[in-house]
Amino acid sequence: MNTPILKMEQISKRFPGVIALDAVDLEVHTGEVVALAGENGAGKSTLMKILGGVYQPDGGQITINGQAVTINSVSDAGFNGIGFVHQELNVLDNLSVGENVYLGREPVWGGFLRLVDRRKLHADTDVYLKRLGLDISSRISLSELSIAQQQMVEIAKALSLNARILIMDEPTSSLTLTETERLLQVIKDLRTQGVSIIYISHRLGEIREIADRVVVLRDGKNAGVLEREEISHDRIVKLMVGRDINRFYVAPETIEKTTYAEVKDLRTSRYPKKTVSFNIRKNEILGFAGLVGAGRSEMAQAIFGVDAPVAGTVSLDGINIKVSSVRDAITRGIYLIPEDRRHSGLILEMPIRENISLPALSRYASAGLVNKDSERTTATNMCEKLNVKTPSIEANPVNLSGGNQQKVVLAKWLSLNPKLLIFDEPTRGIDVGAKAEIYQLMRGLAENGVAIIMISSDMEEILGESDRVAVMHEGAITGILEREECGEEAIMQLAVGQQKNGKT
Image 1 (cartoon, rainbow, N blue to C red):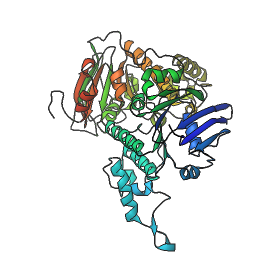
Image 2: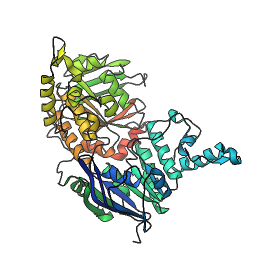
Image 3: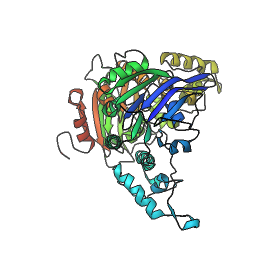
Image 4: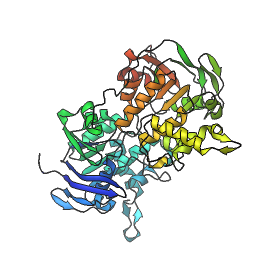
Protein backbone atom coordinates (compact mmCIF):
# COMPACT_ATOMS: atom_id res chain seq x y z
CA MET A 1 0.00 0.00 0.00
CA ASN A 2 0.97 3.68 -0.34
CA THR A 3 1.73 6.05 2.53
CA PRO A 4 -1.02 5.74 5.17
CA ILE A 5 -3.50 8.59 5.30
CA LEU A 6 -3.35 8.27 9.10
CA LYS A 7 -0.58 7.11 11.37
CA MET A 8 -0.77 7.19 15.15
CA GLU A 9 2.55 6.22 16.75
CA GLN A 10 3.32 5.40 20.40
CA ILE A 11 0.19 7.18 21.64
CA SER A 12 0.00 7.27 25.45
CA LYS A 13 -2.63 8.69 27.77
CA ARG A 14 -2.84 8.66 31.55
CA PHE A 15 -5.69 9.53 33.85
CA PRO A 16 -5.39 9.72 37.67
CA GLY A 17 -4.41 6.22 38.77
CA VAL A 18 -4.97 4.70 35.30
CA ILE A 19 -2.80 4.17 32.22
CA ALA A 20 -5.48 4.28 29.53
CA LEU A 21 -3.10 3.96 26.56
CA ASP A 22 0.44 2.64 26.61
CA ALA A 23 2.40 3.35 23.40
CA VAL A 24 -0.41 2.37 21.00
CA ASP A 25 0.13 2.33 17.23
CA LEU A 26 -2.57 2.58 14.55
CA GLU A 27 -2.39 3.23 10.83
CA VAL A 28 -5.12 3.53 8.21
CA HIS A 29 -4.76 3.71 4.43
CA THR A 30 -6.94 5.60 1.96
CA GLY A 31 -10.20 3.80 1.25
CA GLU A 32 -9.64 1.24 4.00
CA VAL A 33 -12.05 0.06 6.70
CA VAL A 34 -10.13 -0.69 9.88
CA ALA A 35 -12.10 -2.25 12.71
CA LEU A 36 -10.90 -1.32 16.18
CA ALA A 37 -11.78 -4.10 18.61
CA GLY A 38 -11.27 -4.71 22.31
CA GLU A 39 -13.14 -5.21 25.55
CA ASN A 40 -14.66 -2.29 27.45
CA GLY A 41 -11.77 -0.42 29.05
CA ALA A 42 -9.25 -1.61 26.43
CA GLY A 43 -8.61 1.98 25.29
CA LYS A 44 -10.56 2.14 22.00
CA SER A 45 -12.67 5.17 22.84
CA THR A 46 -9.74 7.00 24.46
CA LEU A 47 -7.62 6.51 21.33
CA MET A 48 -10.42 7.78 19.10
CA LYS A 49 -11.13 10.75 21.36
CA ILE A 50 -7.49 11.72 20.97
CA LEU A 51 -7.83 11.50 17.19
CA GLY A 52 -11.13 13.43 17.39
CA GLY A 53 -9.61 16.25 19.47
CA VAL A 54 -11.56 15.53 22.66
CA TYR A 55 -8.43 14.45 24.57
CA GLN A 56 -4.79 15.38 24.07
CA PRO A 57 -2.17 12.61 24.29
CA ASP A 58 0.58 12.56 26.90
CA GLY A 59 2.98 11.12 24.34
CA GLY A 60 3.23 10.01 20.73
CA GLN A 61 2.68 11.50 17.30
CA ILE A 62 -0.18 11.75 14.79
CA THR A 63 0.60 11.97 11.09
CA ILE A 64 -1.95 12.69 8.32
CA ASN A 65 -0.85 12.28 4.69
CA GLY A 66 2.76 12.12 5.83
CA GLN A 67 2.57 15.40 7.78
CA ALA A 68 2.77 15.55 11.57
CA VAL A 69 -0.29 17.30 13.02
CA THR A 70 -1.40 18.54 16.41
CA ILE A 71 -5.09 18.05 17.21
CA ASN A 72 -6.01 20.19 20.19
CA SER A 73 -9.75 20.43 19.60
CA VAL A 74 -12.71 19.00 17.73
CA SER A 75 -12.33 21.90 15.29
CA ASP A 76 -8.74 20.85 14.60
CA ALA A 77 -9.95 17.32 13.88
CA GLY A 78 -12.55 18.62 11.42
CA PHE A 79 -9.96 20.85 9.74
CA ASN A 80 -7.81 17.75 9.21
CA GLY A 81 -10.70 15.84 7.60
CA ILE A 82 -11.67 13.72 10.60
CA GLY A 83 -15.36 13.08 11.32
CA PHE A 84 -16.68 11.32 14.43
CA VAL A 85 -19.98 9.48 14.85
CA HIS A 86 -20.29 8.98 18.61
CA GLN A 87 -22.17 6.12 20.27
CA GLU A 88 -24.05 8.59 22.47
CA LEU A 89 -26.28 10.82 20.35
CA ASN A 90 -25.13 14.44 20.02
CA VAL A 91 -28.33 15.91 18.64
CA LEU A 92 -30.78 18.67 19.58
CA ASP A 93 -34.35 17.39 19.42
CA ASN A 94 -35.86 20.90 19.36
CA LEU A 95 -34.30 21.56 15.94
CA SER A 96 -35.15 20.11 12.54
CA VAL A 97 -33.14 17.33 10.91
CA GLY A 98 -31.47 19.77 8.53
CA GLU A 99 -30.63 22.21 11.34
CA ASN A 100 -28.95 19.37 13.24
CA VAL A 101 -26.92 18.24 10.25
CA TYR A 102 -25.59 21.73 9.50
CA LEU A 103 -25.51 23.11 13.06
CA GLY A 104 -22.76 25.75 13.21
CA ARG A 105 -22.14 25.43 9.45
CA GLU A 106 -25.41 26.82 8.09
CA PRO A 107 -25.30 28.16 4.50
CA VAL A 108 -25.98 31.91 4.50
CA TRP A 109 -26.98 34.67 2.11
CA GLY A 110 -27.62 38.43 2.30
CA GLY A 111 -24.01 39.60 2.65
CA PHE A 112 -23.21 41.10 6.03
CA LEU A 113 -26.72 40.18 7.27
CA ARG A 114 -25.70 36.49 7.10
CA LEU A 115 -29.22 35.12 6.86
CA VAL A 116 -29.57 31.34 6.96
CA ASP A 117 -30.33 29.93 3.50
CA ARG A 118 -32.90 27.37 4.66
CA ARG A 119 -33.76 26.19 1.16
CA LYS A 120 -30.12 25.22 0.50
CA LEU A 121 -29.74 23.81 4.01
CA HIS A 122 -32.63 21.40 3.55
CA ALA A 123 -31.78 20.57 -0.06
CA ASP A 124 -28.21 19.67 0.90
CA THR A 125 -29.43 17.62 3.88
CA ASP A 126 -31.86 15.69 1.68
CA VAL A 127 -28.91 14.46 -0.41
CA TYR A 128 -27.35 12.77 2.62
CA LEU A 129 -30.65 11.41 3.90
CA LYS A 130 -31.27 9.82 0.50
CA ARG A 131 -27.73 8.44 0.49
CA LEU A 132 -28.51 6.67 3.77
CA GLY A 133 -31.91 5.46 2.57
CA LEU A 134 -33.65 7.50 5.29
CA ASP A 135 -37.13 8.32 3.98
CA ILE A 136 -37.90 11.42 6.07
CA SER A 137 -38.11 15.15 5.45
CA SER A 138 -35.13 17.26 6.50
CA ARG A 139 -37.67 19.79 7.81
CA ILE A 140 -39.19 17.46 10.40
CA SER A 141 -38.34 18.06 14.06
CA LEU A 142 -35.82 15.59 15.45
CA SER A 143 -38.14 15.01 18.42
CA GLU A 144 -40.54 13.19 16.08
CA LEU A 145 -37.94 10.59 15.09
CA SER A 146 -37.12 7.27 16.71
CA ILE A 147 -33.73 6.72 18.37
CA ALA A 148 -32.67 4.68 15.35
CA GLN A 149 -33.58 7.50 12.96
CA GLN A 150 -31.78 10.04 15.14
CA GLN A 151 -28.66 7.88 14.94
CA MET A 152 -28.89 7.95 11.15
CA VAL A 153 -29.12 11.75 11.29
CA GLU A 154 -25.85 11.75 13.25
CA ILE A 155 -24.26 9.72 10.48
CA ALA A 156 -25.66 12.10 7.85
CA LYS A 157 -24.06 14.98 9.77
CA ALA A 158 -20.67 13.26 9.68
CA LEU A 159 -21.01 12.55 5.95
CA SER A 160 -21.86 16.19 5.31
CA LEU A 161 -18.41 17.17 6.63
CA ASN A 162 -16.83 15.39 3.65
CA ALA A 163 -14.47 13.70 6.06
CA ARG A 164 -11.53 11.78 4.63
CA ILE A 165 -11.25 9.79 7.86
CA LEU A 166 -14.54 8.78 9.49
CA ILE A 167 -14.65 7.32 13.00
CA MET A 168 -17.76 5.28 13.78
CA ASP A 169 -18.20 4.26 17.42
CA GLU A 170 -20.90 1.56 17.73
CA PRO A 171 -22.99 3.20 14.95
CA THR A 172 -25.47 0.31 14.70
CA SER A 173 -26.21 -0.08 18.41
CA SER A 174 -29.67 1.52 18.01
CA LEU A 175 -30.42 0.50 14.42
CA THR A 176 -32.78 -2.15 13.07
CA LEU A 177 -31.51 -4.99 10.89
CA THR A 178 -32.65 -3.18 7.75
CA GLU A 179 -31.00 0.08 8.81
CA THR A 180 -27.83 -1.79 9.78
CA GLU A 181 -27.66 -3.44 6.37
CA ARG A 182 -28.12 -0.05 4.72
CA LEU A 183 -25.38 1.53 6.85
CA LEU A 184 -22.92 -1.28 6.08
CA GLN A 185 -23.65 -0.75 2.38
CA VAL A 186 -23.02 2.99 2.81
CA ILE A 187 -19.68 2.17 4.44
CA LYS A 188 -18.76 -0.03 1.48
CA ASP A 189 -19.74 2.78 -0.91
CA LEU A 190 -17.66 5.31 1.04
CA ARG A 191 -14.68 2.96 0.86
CA THR A 192 -14.91 2.89 -2.95
CA GLN A 193 -14.98 6.71 -2.88
CA GLY A 194 -11.66 6.80 -1.00
CA VAL A 195 -13.00 7.54 2.48
CA SER A 196 -11.09 5.80 5.26
CA ILE A 197 -13.19 4.44 8.11
CA ILE A 198 -12.28 3.40 11.66
CA TYR A 199 -15.11 1.16 12.83
CA ILE A 200 -15.68 0.30 16.50
CA SER A 201 -18.25 -2.40 17.23
CA HIS A 202 -18.92 -5.24 19.65
CA ARG A 203 -20.84 -6.98 16.85
CA LEU A 204 -18.20 -9.25 15.39
CA GLY A 205 -20.45 -10.27 12.49
CA GLU A 206 -20.37 -6.67 11.23
CA ILE A 207 -16.59 -6.57 11.57
CA ARG A 208 -16.21 -9.76 9.55
CA GLU A 209 -18.42 -8.32 6.81
CA ILE A 210 -16.82 -4.93 6.24
CA ALA A 211 -13.31 -4.77 7.74
CA ASP A 212 -10.15 -4.84 5.63
CA ARG A 213 -8.10 -5.17 8.81
CA VAL A 214 -8.82 -5.57 12.51
CA VAL A 215 -6.66 -3.84 15.12
CA VAL A 216 -7.19 -5.23 18.61
CA LEU A 217 -6.41 -3.42 21.87
CA ARG A 218 -6.15 -5.08 25.26
CA ASP A 219 -5.48 -3.26 28.55
CA GLY A 220 -4.42 -0.09 26.74
CA LYS A 221 -1.88 -1.81 24.50
CA ASN A 222 -1.75 -3.26 20.99
CA ALA A 223 -2.77 -6.93 21.18
CA GLY A 224 -2.51 -7.79 17.49
CA VAL A 225 -3.62 -7.14 13.92
CA LEU A 226 -5.66 -9.42 11.64
CA GLU A 227 -5.55 -9.00 7.88
CA ARG A 228 -8.71 -9.53 5.82
CA GLU A 229 -8.09 -13.23 5.15
CA GLU A 230 -7.29 -13.85 8.84
CA ILE A 231 -10.46 -12.32 10.29
CA SER A 232 -12.63 -14.77 12.18
CA HIS A 233 -14.82 -14.68 15.27
CA ASP A 234 -12.50 -16.93 17.29
CA ARG A 235 -9.30 -15.06 16.35
CA ILE A 236 -10.78 -11.68 17.27
CA VAL A 237 -12.06 -13.02 20.59
CA LYS A 238 -8.72 -14.61 21.48
CA LEU A 239 -6.84 -11.35 20.86
CA MET A 240 -9.41 -9.35 22.82
CA VAL A 241 -9.49 -11.48 25.95
CA GLY A 242 -6.07 -13.11 25.73
CA ARG A 243 -7.51 -16.62 25.78
CA ASP A 244 -9.87 -18.92 23.92
CA ILE A 245 -13.55 -18.75 24.87
CA ASN A 246 -14.54 -22.31 24.14
CA ARG A 247 -18.21 -21.90 24.99
CA PHE A 248 -19.31 -18.51 23.69
CA TYR A 249 -22.90 -19.50 22.97
CA VAL A 250 -23.94 -22.12 25.50
CA ALA A 251 -26.14 -24.98 24.33
CA PRO A 252 -28.50 -26.67 26.81
CA GLU A 253 -27.81 -30.13 28.18
CA THR A 254 -31.43 -31.14 27.61
CA ILE A 255 -34.71 -29.40 26.83
CA GLU A 256 -37.78 -30.74 28.55
CA LYS A 257 -41.09 -30.54 26.72
CA THR A 258 -42.88 -29.61 29.95
CA THR A 259 -44.29 -26.07 29.98
CA TYR A 260 -43.15 -24.05 32.99
CA ALA A 261 -44.36 -20.52 32.18
CA GLU A 262 -47.21 -19.46 29.92
CA VAL A 263 -48.61 -16.18 28.63
CA LYS A 264 -52.14 -16.29 27.21
CA ASP A 265 -53.99 -13.65 25.16
CA LEU A 266 -51.83 -10.77 26.40
CA ARG A 267 -52.85 -7.38 25.01
CA THR A 268 -50.78 -4.24 25.56
CA SER A 269 -51.83 -0.59 25.50
CA ARG A 270 -49.57 -0.09 22.44
CA TYR A 271 -51.36 -2.83 20.46
CA PRO A 272 -54.70 -3.31 22.25
CA LYS A 273 -56.28 -5.24 19.36
CA LYS A 274 -53.46 -7.79 19.06
CA THR A 275 -53.00 -10.77 21.39
CA VAL A 276 -49.78 -12.53 22.33
CA SER A 277 -49.66 -16.14 23.53
CA PHE A 278 -46.65 -18.37 24.11
CA ASN A 279 -45.10 -20.79 26.59
CA ILE A 280 -41.63 -21.37 27.97
CA ARG A 281 -40.40 -24.89 28.52
CA LYS A 282 -38.21 -25.98 31.38
CA ASN A 283 -34.47 -25.43 30.82
CA GLU A 284 -34.90 -23.30 27.68
CA ILE A 285 -34.19 -19.75 26.62
CA LEU A 286 -37.02 -18.36 24.48
CA GLY A 287 -35.69 -15.67 22.15
CA PHE A 288 -37.87 -12.85 20.83
CA ALA A 289 -36.92 -11.33 17.47
CA GLY A 290 -38.55 -8.61 15.40
CA LEU A 291 -38.01 -5.16 13.96
CA VAL A 292 -38.01 -2.00 16.06
CA GLY A 293 -41.62 -1.18 16.97
CA ALA A 294 -42.78 -4.79 16.78
CA GLY A 295 -44.03 -4.65 20.37
CA ARG A 296 -41.45 -6.86 22.10
CA SER A 297 -40.46 -4.36 24.81
CA GLU A 298 -44.11 -3.38 25.35
CA MET A 299 -44.91 -7.07 25.90
CA ALA A 300 -42.08 -7.35 28.44
CA GLN A 301 -43.22 -4.23 30.29
CA ALA A 302 -46.79 -5.54 30.44
CA ILE A 303 -45.65 -8.87 31.92
CA PHE A 304 -43.54 -6.98 34.48
CA GLY A 305 -46.36 -4.55 35.30
CA VAL A 306 -44.61 -1.35 34.18
CA ASP A 307 -47.53 -0.77 31.84
CA ALA A 308 -50.40 -2.95 33.06
CA PRO A 309 -51.76 -5.24 30.31
CA VAL A 310 -55.15 -4.51 28.77
CA ALA A 311 -55.95 -8.23 29.04
CA GLY A 312 -54.29 -11.61 29.36
CA THR A 313 -52.94 -14.01 31.95
CA VAL A 314 -49.52 -15.19 33.08
CA SER A 315 -49.00 -18.56 34.76
CA LEU A 316 -45.97 -20.10 36.42
CA ASP A 317 -45.86 -23.85 36.99
CA GLY A 318 -49.60 -24.07 36.36
CA ILE A 319 -50.57 -21.26 38.75
CA ASN A 320 -52.25 -18.16 37.29
CA ILE A 321 -50.74 -14.86 38.39
CA LYS A 322 -52.34 -11.44 38.21
CA VAL A 323 -49.85 -8.68 37.45
CA SER A 324 -51.25 -5.16 37.54
CA SER A 325 -48.14 -3.42 38.89
CA VAL A 326 -44.38 -3.85 39.24
CA ARG A 327 -44.89 -4.68 42.91
CA ASP A 328 -47.16 -7.59 41.90
CA ALA A 329 -44.51 -8.89 39.49
CA ILE A 330 -41.67 -8.63 42.02
CA THR A 331 -43.75 -10.37 44.67
CA ARG A 332 -44.41 -13.25 42.24
CA GLY A 333 -40.79 -13.62 41.15
CA ILE A 334 -41.15 -11.98 37.72
CA TYR A 335 -38.29 -9.59 36.93
CA LEU A 336 -37.19 -7.45 33.98
CA ILE A 337 -33.66 -6.49 32.97
CA PRO A 338 -34.51 -3.47 30.78
CA GLU A 339 -33.04 -2.43 27.47
CA ASP A 340 -31.72 0.85 28.89
CA ARG A 341 -29.93 -0.31 32.02
CA ARG A 342 -28.43 3.11 32.75
CA HIS A 343 -31.79 4.87 32.97
CA SER A 344 -34.25 2.11 33.86
CA GLY A 345 -32.20 -0.62 35.53
CA LEU A 346 -29.92 1.28 37.89
CA ILE A 347 -29.64 4.42 39.97
CA LEU A 348 -26.18 5.33 38.77
CA GLU A 349 -25.25 7.67 41.63
CA MET A 350 -26.34 5.20 44.31
CA PRO A 351 -23.83 2.60 45.60
CA ILE A 352 -23.90 -0.92 44.19
CA ARG A 353 -24.92 -2.16 47.64
CA GLU A 354 -28.07 -0.03 47.66
CA ASN A 355 -28.92 -0.82 44.03
CA ILE A 356 -28.95 -4.54 44.86
CA SER A 357 -31.10 -4.21 47.98
CA LEU A 358 -33.51 -1.58 46.61
CA PRO A 359 -36.25 -3.86 45.16
CA ALA A 360 -36.81 -5.60 48.51
CA LEU A 361 -35.75 -3.21 51.27
CA SER A 362 -38.13 -4.83 53.73
CA ARG A 363 -35.87 -7.89 53.71
CA TYR A 364 -33.05 -5.80 55.07
CA ALA A 365 -35.04 -3.68 57.52
CA SER A 366 -35.82 -4.04 61.18
CA ALA A 367 -38.13 -1.62 62.99
CA GLY A 368 -38.17 0.50 59.87
CA LEU A 369 -34.38 0.84 59.72
CA VAL A 370 -32.23 -0.71 56.99
CA ASN A 371 -29.53 -3.08 58.26
CA LYS A 372 -26.48 -2.10 56.19
CA ASP A 373 -24.51 -5.14 57.33
CA SER A 374 -27.18 -7.37 55.82
CA GLU A 375 -27.09 -5.30 52.62
CA ARG A 376 -23.31 -5.63 52.46
CA THR A 377 -23.41 -9.39 52.93
CA THR A 378 -25.89 -9.89 50.10
CA ALA A 379 -24.19 -7.40 47.76
CA THR A 380 -20.74 -8.89 48.39
CA ASN A 381 -21.96 -12.44 47.80
CA MET A 382 -23.79 -11.52 44.59
CA CYS A 383 -20.88 -9.50 43.19
CA GLU A 384 -18.49 -12.38 43.88
CA LYS A 385 -20.91 -14.89 42.34
CA LEU A 386 -21.33 -12.82 39.17
CA ASN A 387 -17.68 -11.71 39.00
CA VAL A 388 -18.56 -8.00 39.07
CA LYS A 389 -15.34 -6.06 38.57
CA THR A 390 -15.58 -3.18 41.01
CA PRO A 391 -13.22 -1.73 43.62
CA SER A 392 -15.99 -1.87 46.22
CA ILE A 393 -19.71 -2.51 46.66
CA GLU A 394 -19.81 1.12 47.82
CA ALA A 395 -18.74 2.29 44.35
CA ASN A 396 -21.38 3.84 42.10
CA PRO A 397 -22.41 1.89 38.95
CA VAL A 398 -21.81 5.01 36.84
CA ASN A 399 -18.09 4.22 37.01
CA LEU A 400 -18.44 0.60 35.85
CA SER A 401 -18.22 -0.82 32.32
CA GLY A 402 -21.44 -1.75 30.52
CA GLY A 403 -20.93 -5.43 31.21
CA ASN A 404 -20.44 -4.88 34.93
CA GLN A 405 -23.45 -2.55 35.10
CA GLN A 406 -25.53 -5.33 33.52
CA LYS A 407 -24.22 -7.77 36.14
CA VAL A 408 -25.32 -5.40 38.94
CA VAL A 409 -28.85 -5.31 37.47
CA LEU A 410 -28.76 -9.09 37.32
CA ALA A 411 -27.43 -9.33 40.90
CA LYS A 412 -30.37 -7.24 42.10
CA TRP A 413 -32.85 -9.81 40.79
CA LEU A 414 -30.89 -13.00 41.45
CA SER A 415 -30.76 -12.13 45.14
CA LEU A 416 -34.58 -12.49 45.11
CA ASN A 417 -34.75 -16.02 43.59
CA PRO A 418 -36.45 -15.27 40.24
CA LYS A 419 -39.00 -17.55 38.59
CA LEU A 420 -39.39 -15.66 35.29
CA LEU A 421 -36.58 -13.40 34.10
CA ILE A 422 -36.93 -11.17 31.03
CA PHE A 423 -33.73 -9.91 29.37
CA ASP A 424 -34.38 -6.98 27.00
CA GLU A 425 -31.27 -6.54 24.78
CA PRO A 426 -29.05 -8.29 27.37
CA THR A 427 -25.67 -7.53 25.76
CA ARG A 428 -26.17 -4.21 23.95
CA GLY A 429 -22.93 -2.21 24.27
CA ILE A 430 -21.17 -5.03 26.14
CA ASP A 431 -17.77 -6.38 25.13
CA VAL A 432 -17.21 -9.93 23.97
CA GLY A 433 -15.73 -11.25 27.22
CA ALA A 434 -18.64 -9.95 29.29
CA LYS A 435 -21.08 -11.28 26.67
CA ALA A 436 -19.75 -14.81 27.17
CA GLU A 437 -20.24 -14.45 30.92
CA ILE A 438 -23.80 -13.15 30.52
CA TYR A 439 -24.66 -16.04 28.19
CA GLN A 440 -23.29 -18.58 30.66
CA LEU A 441 -25.28 -16.95 33.48
CA MET A 442 -28.46 -17.05 31.40
CA ARG A 443 -27.96 -20.70 30.53
CA GLY A 444 -27.20 -21.57 34.15
CA LEU A 445 -30.39 -19.88 35.29
CA ALA A 446 -32.47 -21.74 32.69
CA GLU A 447 -30.96 -25.08 33.72
CA ASN A 448 -31.78 -24.27 37.35
CA GLY A 449 -35.47 -23.83 36.57
CA VAL A 450 -35.79 -20.09 35.85
CA ALA A 451 -37.98 -19.26 32.85
CA ILE A 452 -35.93 -17.04 30.50
CA ILE A 453 -37.22 -14.63 27.85
CA MET A 454 -34.48 -12.97 25.76
CA ILE A 455 -35.41 -10.03 23.55
CA SER A 456 -32.62 -9.14 21.13
CA SER A 457 -32.04 -7.21 17.90
CA ASP A 458 -28.67 -8.95 17.42
CA MET A 459 -29.34 -11.74 14.91
CA GLU A 460 -26.14 -13.57 15.82
CA GLU A 461 -27.21 -13.56 19.48
CA ILE A 462 -30.74 -14.73 18.68
CA LEU A 463 -29.49 -17.61 16.55
CA GLY A 464 -26.68 -18.58 18.91
CA GLU A 465 -28.37 -18.45 22.31
CA SER A 466 -32.08 -19.17 21.74
CA ASP A 467 -33.56 -22.65 22.03
CA ARG A 468 -36.69 -21.41 20.22
CA VAL A 469 -37.38 -18.06 18.60
CA ALA A 470 -40.71 -16.20 18.73
CA VAL A 471 -40.93 -13.48 16.07
CA MET A 472 -43.18 -10.43 16.46
CA HIS A 473 -44.65 -8.00 13.95
CA GLU A 474 -46.88 -5.05 14.87
CA GLY A 475 -47.84 -6.39 18.29
CA ALA A 476 -48.48 -10.04 17.36
CA ILE A 477 -46.40 -13.21 17.16
CA THR A 478 -46.15 -14.26 13.52
CA GLY A 479 -44.44 -17.55 14.32
CA ILE A 480 -42.38 -19.55 16.80
CA LEU A 481 -39.42 -21.42 15.34
CA GLU A 482 -37.78 -24.50 16.81
CA ARG A 483 -33.98 -24.33 16.96
CA GLU A 484 -33.54 -26.46 13.82
CA GLU A 485 -35.90 -24.14 11.89
CA CYS A 486 -34.05 -20.95 12.82
CA GLY A 487 -32.17 -18.96 10.21
CA GLU A 488 -31.85 -15.30 9.23
CA GLU A 489 -34.19 -15.63 6.26
CA ALA A 490 -36.86 -17.52 8.20
CA ILE A 491 -36.78 -14.95 11.01
CA MET A 492 -36.84 -11.94 8.67
CA GLN A 493 -39.84 -13.29 6.75
CA LEU A 494 -41.77 -13.50 10.02
CA ALA A 495 -40.45 -10.12 11.19
CA VAL A 496 -41.97 -8.34 8.17
CA GLY A 497 -45.39 -9.88 8.75
CA GLN A 498 -45.44 -13.18 6.90
CA GLN A 499 -46.98 -15.95 8.98
CA LYS A 500 -45.12 -19.19 9.58
CA ASN A 501 -47.54 -20.99 7.25
CA GLY A 502 -46.71 -18.54 4.45
CA LYS A 503 -49.71 -16.22 4.86
CA THR A 504 -49.39 -12.46 5.34
